[in-house]
Image (cartoon, rainbow over all chains, first blue to last red):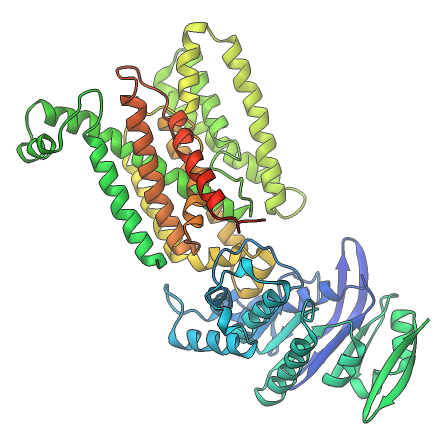
Length: 254
Length: 323
């Protein structure tokens, strides 16, 4: 579905990750792990097509990403950036409905299926009671739910999330991650998420991309590469593995 | 009140207010006489209405509509609440052209030179903002403010060096003065074009207020949209400035007033700004030409005197407006 071949992630003049190659298929749920400033955000920006790689195009459905129009690409790959400008004056329902931009047919937008998808997204993130409130008036966590809902409404084949757990309470985090695992499995989607909580990553995700400080990377199935050894190298912090029932947990030590 | 009904009521009110203003002036025409003269299309009142009042109200309305929409578009483009139609120095460029025409005693060329000055500013700002890296709101706004500051220095120089008897006319023109303005059909076409643009591309503009990164990820062709918005907003400002000078505050204040009444989607915000801005300048101009009649005040003074208290009132009423 998404093919990355010999991609360099470059910020300014510096190559943060070199010669990156991996494939994401539908049904896979990826975590992107790495220390601060290793190029994770730049990577998801490249993967979503909002910045262009210097060379070696990224392929979506075996077609070069640059061959897509902005709208048709947004139906294949959707990114929720970590930050956005807070100039939106509308209601929560309208904010989430904006996610349907790429699907709008004709001038007036908002078909019945758009409205249905919008209300499903509001419901899924438990903010339907806020849909007539102003987006600006929401708390940080409520805002984050509305943001997540807007990418759900966009309904791309591949979801890209840049640290989406920010401001969410525990119940919100668990529900969100369970929802993602579920739609990836049942609705033929794929997801890649920049995340810092390795224990959530090992529980909910099928695949992992680790981006190291020296510009190298590891990619593969979680069970194989989520080891205390790799994580210790990744974060330059020693991790011990403990078992909690069936689940492997990693505890950082000083 | 829904945004649709708000748009309809503002549109109706603006048109009624503007028509009523046809009756006001140094010669006051009662409403029955007004209708009578329109029916008969003759007599002294008809001459006043058709030759003087109506064109004046029309040019005032179009100026206000263009300025308010220009300000609204630029506030979205630059993601800056302080943006107004003159932020790039378009008015300064036009002023420089017009003032040069006056100084060098070729007033017939004043409109043409105004166009040249403003056109050069539009190209210059886009060119400088684009060099080196991509243009972004930050580069664009700083470039505009710098170009504007430079031109204003030149204008001050011209004002200081020009003969004192010309100074008053120049200052009037720079404050915005519709005394010699005429309604131009191309300005009307531009006005309708921008209203249509706002209605058709309203959702893309809504998405732009989340920043270009988010808008791009949603599927908006941000670059193309930004160029179109930049050009339309600039042309609107030029169309007003070459006829009526730099009428202030309309472009800054009207979009905020509309937003504070609860209309935020650009699909409604742009047309409503047009109607409200049009009505505001019509009222301001009517006051400017009748309060001290036969002395005429610059309309730019009145727009500020009316618009500023309204905005401050709404700002106080809505304590939740932060950031």
